[in-house]
Amino acid sequence: MDLRIMGFDSPLLNTLQHMMDLSDDTEKIPNAPSKVYMRDAKAMAATPADIKEYPKSYVFIVDMPGLKSGDIKVQVEDDNMLLISGERKREEEKEGAKYVRMERRVGKFMRKFALPENANADAISAICQDGVLTVTVEKLPPPGPKKPKTIEVKIA
Image (cartoon, rainbow, N blue to C red; front, side, top):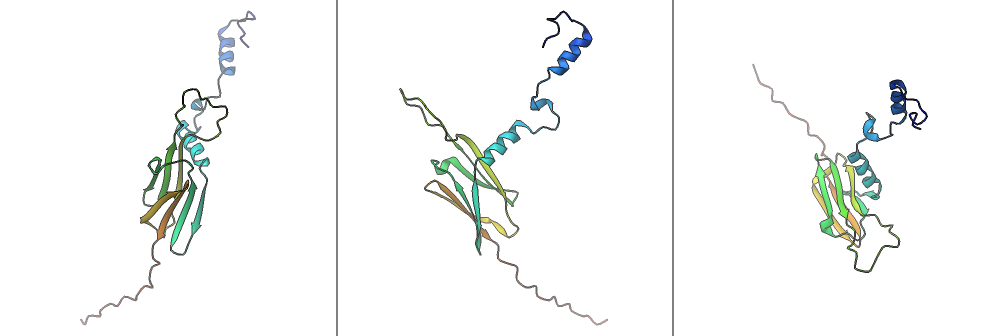
């Protein structure tokens, strides 16, 4: 409500009016998450995944219907973070056709997974078949038993 319409026009009332009209824009809140963070959080939440552990590997299974291998990127960051990302593009509209309903998600997607300490970041394979991405991360061999260290005794 604008107080000037009712005939009240003073600096104090204008200041109060301005304070009451402040928007809830997240950019004005000091500790609010950034737009990039919010976009990435939505992209991560929209990409469900299953993770299986086998005796010699970890397997990440992610549904990727309608995507080609060129639309999917699998990376390892900092030697312990598996990043699966990509983009699902909207189909070109053909002349005379229009969407009546659009429910399939389009846009970028991303998932990050912290790899366990025994994961071998140099032995990762990925295959996409029938709309399902399967990423296999081999495990490092368990460390062998430590041999006792023999120290030579010198005669003084």
